[in-house]
Length: 201
Image (cartoon, rainbow, N blue to C red; front, side, top):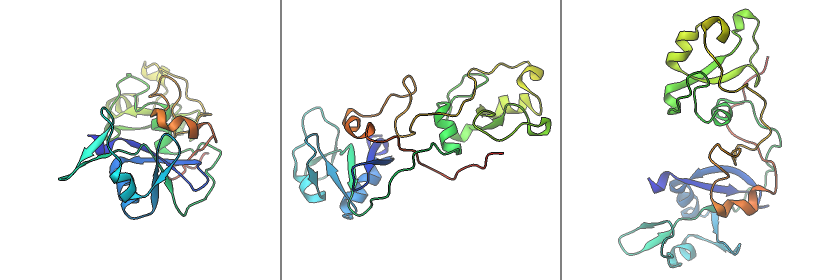
C-alpha cells in the first residue's frame, strides 16, 4: 500500500536521521513539524505541497477534491540533532543486515516470524555481538536448539559481521539505496540510528 512505503526524514541541517512511512510523513507535514522537499530542493508546507499538481506517473494519493503528490523526502522544521556515526547493535539493524532472511534456511520472512539466534550458544561461551548473532526463523532456531551449526548439521548462509553501512540505505543487493530522491542526502553522512541498542557481551 502506497501509504506504507518509505519516506526519508532529514533534520534541519539536511542530514538523514530516519526512514518513515508516507502516512507518517503526511501527518508531520499537516502538523507543521516537517516540510516536503522537491527535486529542486525547494521546501513546501502542507498547503503549498498539496497545491502542487501531481505529475503523471508520479506517486500520488487521492482525496475527494484532488490528487496529492507523495513526498519522498521531508525536513523536520525544529530538529537539528546530528545522527549517530556508529551502527547501533539492535534487533532492527540485525534484521536489516540479514535482510529479514533466516541465515540457516534462506527464507525471507516477516519479522513476526523471525528471531535472533546465537551462532555459538551462550551456554557454550558464545557472546552477544554482531559476530555471533544472526536472524533465524523459528523452526530453524528450534532445530538448532542449544548447539552450534556444525553440531546441528546446519550451515550459515553468511558469516555474521559488524556492518559498516548506514541502516538508512542498505548495502547493494539488499534493497538498494531507496528512492532516487534520497541520493543527494544519503551521501552526506554515514548516519546510523534506530531502536534500543542491544548490550554486547
